[in-house]
Length: 285
Image 1: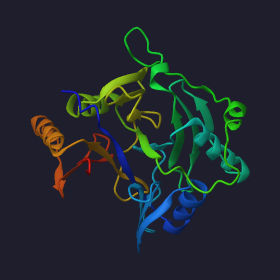
Image 2: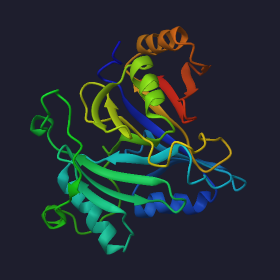
Image 3: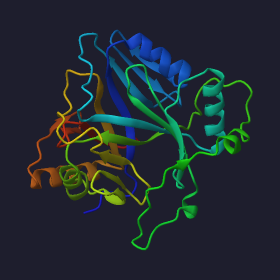
């Protein structure tokens, strides 16, 4: 059964060694705001109300191994092309090191890393009516150079201070150890639908026909290790479904497939087959 079409990604929780350094980066460079802060944890927000990124600090963590499952990147979706232009100009002004910038035809994206090598994408969506699908109804895997000059020409603010308040976590992209196992878990059990497939090494899936809410790849190698709780990087990310009825449908599917999970405050906590943490919860109304 397909997962509900209104399903989307909520917050991402990262484990970090140097909490203060990461807070500075995500507030000053990326433009999020502190929503709440405890001794070893901070919730960051774009709208001043909703957590979008949670950082859990622990200096005893080991650095995530290069050949391992975990976060490939988290992806912050800004509302418009001019918003992306403002972000890019800010990065240029502050000499922020970027990893790349791409036009995927359904989106335009800028890529970088935080100081602990967690990948970040900041992107804007092309109007859905302009997405071009193939004869199977799928979105081709396209990654063309971003027209930086055209983008910067849309900049409309002189002094940049933060991301727009209606920025959301658009998707997550994960390193996994096995595409077939990830496909079975995310599509056959949870009910996400394929949108794009890159050979046997990457898969892009979503709810409601979006280009992707979750992507998985084996670019770190299939002989790596599962994501662990004692290393830096992804602790878990949220999949938000519209209601508790939809949470119960997910529970039924997990039990039918004998997938281990536990319940915490009505939320489902589990790990995908590569050890990436997932929290499934109902939309707060």
